[in-house]
Length: 344
Image (cartoon, rainbow, N blue to C red; front, side, top):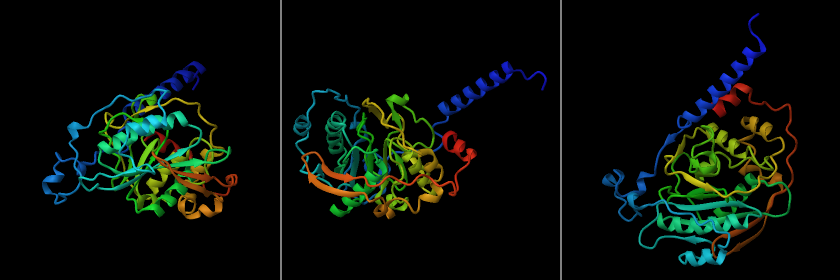
């Protein structure tokens, strides 16, 4: 121990840091299964044995990576003209075949007009190419309180299920634009992370268990995990909490290959972090079955209005009361679990 100098300690610290960094960079694919929805592609083995002759089929080779229109001059009217197939309320379904799933795409939203124009212009074109029966739901938070993304998803999900019986819910951040039509917006029987490669993150996930940006769950599985936690107000941790919920529910995580799950992030200033976000997240095991879809009334969040626009259905939501500060009496995950979640 006599030779353990501050310089030696610093070298050990630097070595440990870069070892963890390299592990994270080169093992990011080991925490989930890469897959694609073969049931929808006519050149897959699925159709050799399937009797679903009336179902929509896609030729994988004809789905392309397309240039993204990031022009600030793009208007909502331009996006509507570019997508004349869209029906009032932001919905469409193919007429020449039966879509495999009815898909709702929920976009939590406040004060991101430019991002929304770019996203809607891209999504409607892509979803038609993919022959998806879909409806785009804009979950708009009223007022200027902390942004409660989880509550917006939950309220919009419950309201959308009153409109029709959807099979699949896509949770879509407004600032992420899909680059390729090969990233098909459907659900599998697992927890699907569609945004597996974002340009701002050097086109690979930041860590294995990341489950944010753009994700897909069957409506049955969204209810199984009890939706999002309602305690996160502000930016951060609600996506990790959802990832933990899928683990608790025994769901496998799947992702498209990284050349498929590519997204461009439209830059913006980040909002304030969720107060007590990490504490709420580390208490996920206590909360996930009792805080979510099944206790929305406690939050006092409510729907203020539902209006149909050309490119989307607008659900304006009052987010409700702030959550109570986290209790120290609630069991919290330890540091070993924390490192396991973010590194393995």
